[in-house]
Length: 533
Image (cartoon, rainbow, N blue to C red; front, top):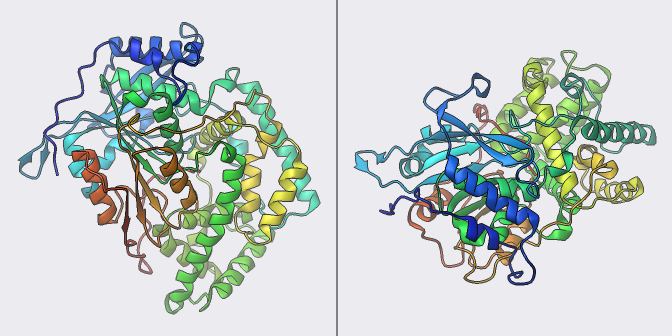
């Protein structure tokens, strides 16, 4: 499954191709925009400068085996000579060897984990895992922190200590008083974002896509090999629309629905509905293992235990730090990843029996992570609020989500509070990019999706597949883990490796049986998991 491909690392000047790069269907319709010209200038500079690799900063908390560097990008691509910000980048060089066999290097594989606001700096470490060793033999594994994340001109909208304050409340069907309180918090958060970040309007998906092209040039890659998960699929699709001739191979893992009308208000409504289905999957699994957890033999009985625990935490937070808000955040992870199911079920069962320690261990906020989490939330909010128009009248949010919460109470209102600052956002809004590529315009691409994914519901993968001619969709049936490439499903990984190593894809679509569900009492996998849409 290896291609003896030539190295993609010697790139000539890319100014002409960058200047003509424009959204599909717009060729010849208008002269290049200032942002398009600015991207070409920034890419040429990055190509010339390259990346000076050295030891990673201690703040990155990465092993000495990885190398790090920076890439300069304009804050505002319409003014490429204006303020510059630096993106931090990490790399593990291709090992060139799998087992005893030599493997030809195929260039850099750049990864983005989503968010918005997730950092990919840890990604090169994935090469140590068995599922990634074949790819790590052929590719330099490259991760980076997008603009605003980590040390790259970090965004912040409030004091991290205030952001991480606990315990907090959470209501599935909030009363008017609680709604007023959360509206005031959203308004204050939006003001804080504007006051603390003068360049706030430049943190967008469009600029993330432009940054990616500058990173490609800095790496010396004529064409980009990229894998994006969750939100990373959306700005990867925007990149493919803006720069189709710069794409070598591209993987969209757990695809966001890119239809302009979905960005971002409608996508969040769909996400809340999908989390209800995934929450039901978790409760059904717990009920199936009632002999272990004793939380009931039906999903309804498990739900009653959960509601009882939440009511108790509203009056007496566990460990003084875990209230309903922290409980909800912890159990939301069971909707993202089923490898969290055993640990979450154990914590709930222990609390019901009078032992709060496992719940506190899993749900209490970590003070040392407060700054990183506040930064990630600030970037998430800035990008989503800047990307598209949002309803500005709370009555619209109230109507839509009150109706949805009748059938999907688990996550609906907490999702509202996370995104409500966008109703009061002070920065100008963009119109979403019309993601698409015609036949022959874009190299064949691979879409991976789990059928019951809650964070990025399956309809998003179908929509992206329709919009990108030549794309191929691989579906993990009857499974809901968010981000399936390089995970436990060998069938999925086989398609991923065939594509990235050989450029080989199924004819149009393929399906894989689901990976095995976890066994009770198995340990929770300790892998960084960013909040992703």
